[in-house]
Amino acid sequence: MTTHHNEDVIHRKSGLFKRFEKYLGEFVYGGIDGCVTTFAVVAGSVGAGLDSAVIIILGFANLLADGFAMSIGAYLSTRSEKDNYHKHKQIEYWEVANLPEVEREEVREIYAKKGFEGELLEKVVDVITSDTDVWVNTMMKEELEMIEEDRSPFWIGTTTYISFILIGLIPLITYVVDYISPIGKNLFLIASVLTAFGFIIIGWLKTYVNQTSAWKGILETLVLGGIAAVVAYFVGDFLEQLISG
Image (cartoon, rainbow, N blue to C red):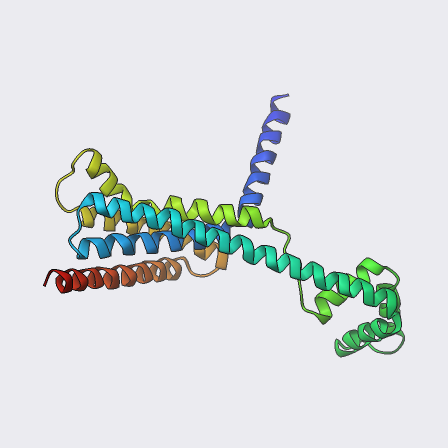
């Protein structure tokens, strides 16, 4: 009984991980964007000499608004891609039903280019065109080079938003804690160290998605985040001097 229960738990956990893994790319890129943009806001605010309360306001405004905009963009992009796929698929169904000889010849040309010829080529064409769904799916993939997105646009957008907020919160944590219970000096240094850890985690996850070198992914994410922060800091400093001067 216990063995079956444990196996069931493991199976459910494995299923949940597989579902999460499908959206890991969105989690990674939402997290990168959230961490980079929020840290840039913090760095720019520090460069401009703003106090913690203002940094928190600007940071959370960026976090919620930019994160929502990014998630909506991800949702609409995926929704549009799926709609476009289904539109072309309906066209292919119509062509197969109304122009079967033309479509059959297209299948023959596709597989002839792949090296099939003679009796084998005709057999392949016969097999493919004997099933309408297989025929249409073949045309979608081979002729139009379109592959159906099987993931939910809703979950793509939601995963992006959750990741943007979770990872984007890291640069703000120090200032929120300081606002509630003053820490003292070196707030930006502490925030920078915490953000660096955030970049390391998200950079490592990115290498898992892209199947690339862990060190390369982590270093790349750290460097890009650092450049964004440096630029934002000096822009904030420049504008503060320009306005106050």
